Length: 102
Image 1: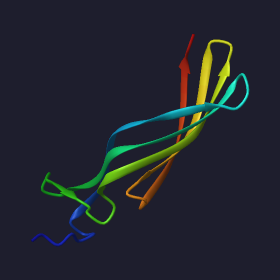
Image 2: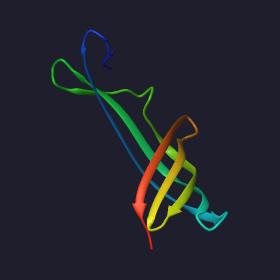
Image 3: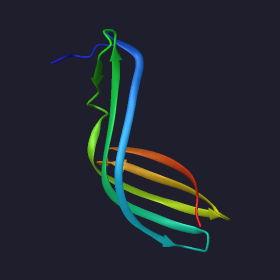
């Protein structure tokens, strides 16, 4: 077991996340829709040590159920989405998306 000390860690951290979700969209008005979904997500945070190795911070890393709720707004061919995502109902993130649709 390696005990992480602030003296051993460089001020470099790496954050990664990946998820697969599925859900439904409910049209509220012509341009606006509500999105809800569930799936599986993984989020990890690691710190680089002075010896060049990385140590995963298990206090802020998790994997499990991912839930998503958000809105989808269409302006002409462009789509703007704003989502709130939680992994294991432990960590929450806001996500902004931009895209094109037909």
